[in-house]
Image 1 (cartoon, rainbow, N blue to C red):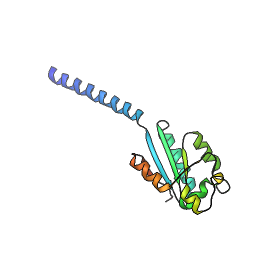
Image 2 (cartoon, rainbow, N blue to C red):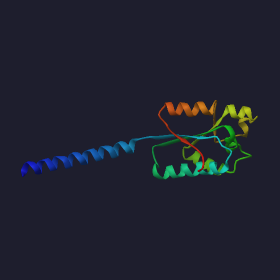
Image 3 (tube, rainbow, N blue to C red):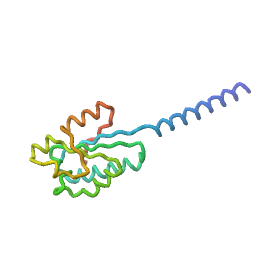
Image 4 (tube, rainbow, N blue to C red):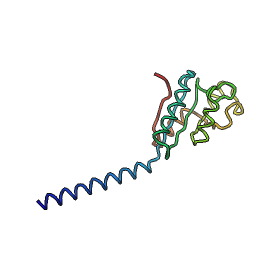
Length: 145
């Protein structure tokens, strides 16, 4: 009986120790997410903002998100064309990065001064998405169902 009791105690301690280790590891995990936005569908733009806010509710710390905007979505970051400037600015202040594709900007004749001042630019949106994935970032394609 004492041997079974000792085994039970050992297994309980082992289980608790491993649970604490997993919780400690999860607390240190940095969640890195790259979101690709390349649609002119403004409901997808709003959905992207909503997705980011929902992610922040679950992972309020240790979170890095970059929204890479290219192609038909470029107006999402153009000062005079976006309807989400306040939301984008607010998220930027919380550490979310928004990046406009310079290839797309050139194609559409958009100067950097036309882009929201709190957004960044990258030489190629597609290359930025691929680079983040190669660095181990999780990928999310923006859109609506």
